[in-house]
Image 1: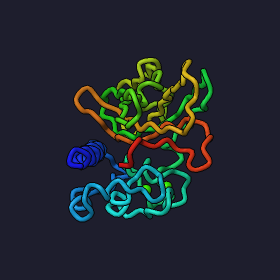
Image 2 (image 1 turned 135 degrees about the horizontal axis):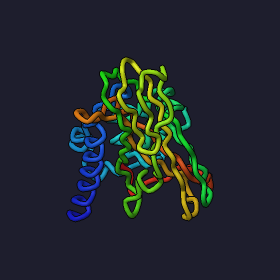
Image 3 (image 1 turned 45 degrees about the vertical axis):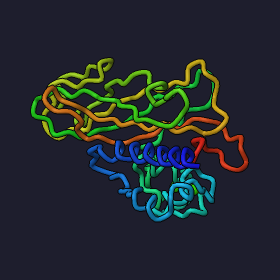
Length: 243
Ligand SMILES: [Ca+2]
Ligand SMILES: [Ca+2]
């Protein structure tokens, strides 16, 4: 029994670490939910923590900590499961989070690909701005992340156009940007030759721009969603044990 209890504690620790990793990011919007899992563990004990009444992959104790409904897999009825929203720093009680422009839908078919456009607003003083894609960890076997689906980012357009001296499309870079400018990038994702999954997977990532002297300007969190709806109980992929 002791070894089992230790294992549960390790699971909780891993989840807390993942959340802290998400929470440490500096975002201008969609601040991550603050979670104090240590209190939940003290109040309920490690064994109780693995109860998942709504079987959404988020333990009852975690749901109490973040304020979601432990009997409802999608507490805010926005179509996205609580587990995904909490894990990725979205607002599980706000049906407008994640916003539609933060979600990349990739068809669950062999060879499927999508070009996803996103914008970053900068206030240029003649610097160059490069797009930065960064995949975030998920619990999938083999450590699969959004990086496995990411093909490339390219620079598409500046608005107003004259604010950028040049657009280096393939390098995802805008040269000598002057003034408040909206930079548009296209991110290409592809499923490649791997077949679709039997449940719907979600892959968090962030995108921002950097100048030669600064990093992570306008960091925004996104998610790639891909998979088939096969299960009647819940179409979303879940970890082996609730988090
Ligand atoms: Ca749950
Ligand atoms: Ca939701």
